[in-house]
Amino acid sequence: MACERSPELMLLVDGELSPFEARALEAHAASCDTCARERARLEALSAAIATTAPPRPAPPDLRRRIERALEPAPSARARPWLSLAAALLLGAVIGGGATWQLVVPGRAGVDSAVAVHVRALMANHLIEIASSDQHAVRPWFAGKVPLAPPAPNLDAHGFMLVGGRIDQIDGKPAAAVVYRRRQHIVDLIVAAMPEGGAPRHLVRHGYNVEFWNADGLAFWAVSDLNPDELREFAELVRAAR
Amino acid sequence: MGEENERHERFRRQALPHLDAAYNFACWLLHNEVDAEDVVQEAFLRAFRSFGELRDTEPRAWLMAIVRNAAFDFLRRSRRGAGVLLREEDPRLVSLEPSPEDVSIARSDERRLVRLIASLPPQFREVLILREQAGLAYQEIATIIGAPIGTVMSRLARGRRLLADAWQGTGPGKERRHGV
Image (cartoon, chains in turn purple, red):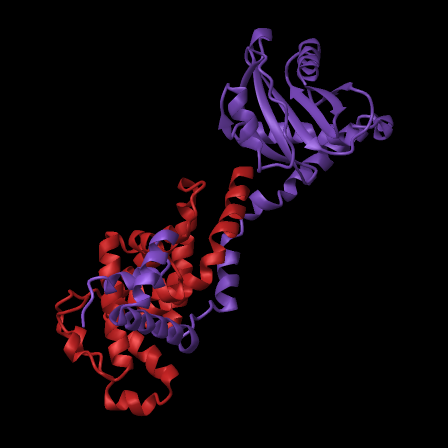
């Protein structure tokens, strides 16, 4: 005995019907022998496959091989030479007779911040997202670093937003927001770090650095811009918060 | 480079959970667990290289399609043709009756059902595996095999009928050419 509705039973068993359609078809199958048999046949086959031919899980070794093949290249992962660069800079500072700065809060991060900036310039890796729109740059960081760096629009003050990148400072994730004034790059590096102390200005290897804290974040503005203009930049960013 | 790390992390989070399903699918396409491992590994690396294009989409169907392509590439290279797609009128469609040696080797229901699934023509076998073992929706299966959803439904119905008939020992004879 054929029933024109029996092909639909497959959709019911596979969960492809809406609740409304499913209820209507179930009601029909309750009073149609052909459809009741078709439903039982499909369910028996599914149950047999589930119990006697279960899917084979991937061997642990395959999982390990794929995970290993997916490891980022060492240079992208650990950046061992970053700490080396920082150590060299530190050595230069100490060699220059500036050992008193060891006790100044924010000092350690400054060396690293300059190293981060120089490396980004040398590796031609200053910008990962190029945008002059603060509403594009700020959300771009969401989910990539555990902090939301400010990226205010400072066009009116002559600091053009260029873009941003993800970086690391002393092994911790950092966000870098990049501005430009004339031919000078201003790298605003932001990390969640317990750096203490008042805002300060420092010079490292010819770069000017403005350091400050706010809301549990440490900020380093690094640039070859002159100290006065960089201080103006830092004040604008602080005021924009 | 931060972007690169983020891509790795996202791939790990979104793609690796489907490794079991991918491996099982490859086993059924290739009839060989060692080949399946190679093909899945290659497919996952292939997938990773083009992962950037696929920001927010659930990657399961896309990933399974890559596994399927990699499996077919492998079969073409090795010229074994074990999973070569048959036309629906291929005479091998009716060769589902377990041979006497099948029956003697595989006494238990368990072995018999596995063997019967393995001897299904590939275009029916793949939709059956994707539905019954991977639990995918018709739409996902359609994406994976690159066919309309109606084709998925007719192949699934036909494959199930062939399998059920063979399993219950009625043989596929009455079925041939008149699938649902």
